[in-house]
Image (tube, rainbow, N blue to C red; front, top):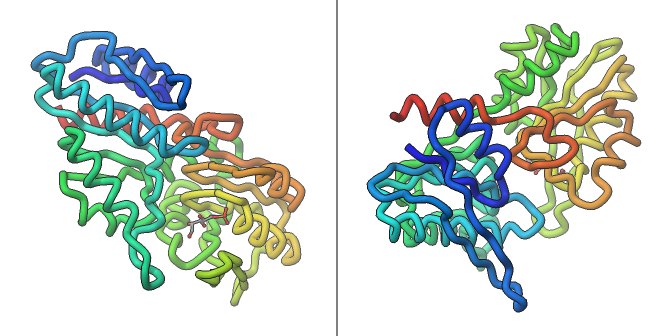
Length: 293
Ligand code: R5P
C-alpha cells in the first residue's frame, strides 16, 4: 500500500506513513487564478493499493472535497488497483436525512460523487451518524477516536473524571470515554430548533458538584453546545470543566467563548489541524490500514 498525502492532512498522512511503513506519495497542489484547484501525484501508484488521507474540514470544505475527488481520479488513471479514501472529518455528514421538506441528503450526494471519481473504499472517524454510511455506494467504516481523547486526560492526571455528553445522542461517546476514565457518566438534554439552529439544554437529575467533568462531543462547531453545557456545570458546582471533541471546527470566536464559559482546556484531534488538534489520529488510522493489508 502507498499513502497519498492530501494537502489538507499532509502531516497526518506523513505520520501514518511513518507508523505503517507504507511509502508516502506527495501531492503537488496549486490554485489557479480563478480559484480552481489542481493536484498532481508526485510518485508512481501503478499496480498499488493506495490510501488518500484528506480531511474535509472548514475552511474550504468544498475545495477539499474536490481535491479528494481529483486525487482519486489521478490515482485510478495512474494505475492504482484500489483507492481508499481516509477522510477524518467528512463535510456535510450532519445533513444525513431530510429534516425539512424540500431538502436533499447532502452526505449521500458527496459519497456518490466520490464513487464516480474512483474511490473504492471509505474510512472516516466518528462520523456524526453511523447510519449515513449504510447508504454509501462503497464499503465504508467509521473509527472512534474517543478512547485516544480520554487517554489524553488520563495522562494529564484526570483518571476518574466524569464523562458528560451534551445530549442524549452522544451518550455512546461519553460511555466510550468512561471505559477509559473509569468515573461516572451522564448527559444533558438538548433540543435544536430546525429553522433557527438555536439550542436549549437542560440537566435532569445530573449532579456533578465538586467533580472534574469532561464534556465530550463528536463536533464543536460554533461552540454553542459546549458553552451551554459549561454554564450548567459551573452552576452545579463542578470543580474543573474540560472539553474534548473529535472534530474541533471552532468556527469564529468559538474557542474564546468556550474558555470564557469556564472550560479549562479544549482538546481535539488532528482531523482538524490547528491549536486544539492535540491528539493525533495516526495510530488509529495506521492500525486500521495495517489490519486491512
Ligand atoms: C450535533 O448534534 C453535534 O453532535 C454537535 O453537538 C454540534 O455539531 C455542535 O455544534 P455547536 O458547536 O455549533 O453547538
